[in-house]
Image (cartoon, rainbow, N blue to C red; front, side, top):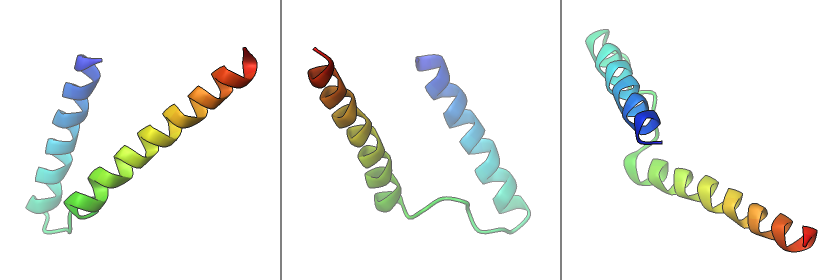
Length: 57
């Protein structure tokens, strides 16, 4: 899991650097909106996972 996180960070860093070098806007939402979006996706997935586990037992 840590390896995946490090690879994602490195890939994001490279993409961000390339976009800035060729003077394009960064392909990412504003910081707070991006963090909240990721948190929402994670929490929504955990919520459904919990509901499915409760319904199947």
